[in-house]
Length: 285
Image (tube, rainbow, N blue to C red):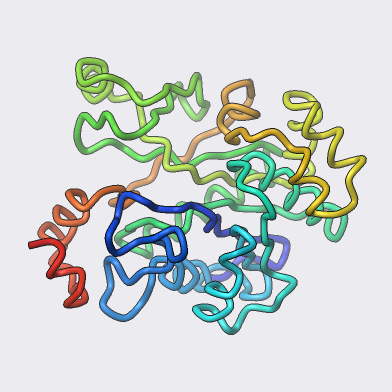
């Protein structure tokens, strides 16, 4: 299973992951830790998963500039040109705008998948098939496609998307417990796992229509430093996705977790019989 070299993957690895203290620190946040595997970090697991589907030359990482040495240490096979170091913490919209725009200049027909670095996913084969399907739909329909994760419980810690057929009707912020139970019963509400697949030209066009301030900066600023200095701090959900009228969804028939808390990590370890490092085991006790 291998996608054509028209397809690219962007691992978003800039978060600070403070909820896993004392193991995670601002100097080494959770994506750089061996949390759910005794020998591989979340970033390394994410890369290995994607390398089964994407040309390794087409796998990119976006992170905070101060974490570039950690990325290079953990993924020594990556070239410097495959790593984008954000000079300021500005959330996901500026990151996706910049990478999409730069990639479009190199390969106008490129399809890009953007995915968080810190996830638990099983079975891997099902995940890869879903991504392959989403890449094909994004190209065929010239649309932004997201992965909708079927909720397994009434979570108040996840954002949701409301599905109508193969379209996203609306995005919903983290609900209260009562609303989350209604979403679970309804069956048409899915967790928003923050994974998006799109033609880069379509994403740049979406910024032009829906977030013109960011698009204008793409035209004016020729350096990453200059762009991030002036870009607003805003998520891709707020800047583009919630305003988009033609967003498509592919249902994820795989088990997913954003590994958000020590409690969720303990649950995952128990349910999936995960082998954990001695250090993580000690902190879970």
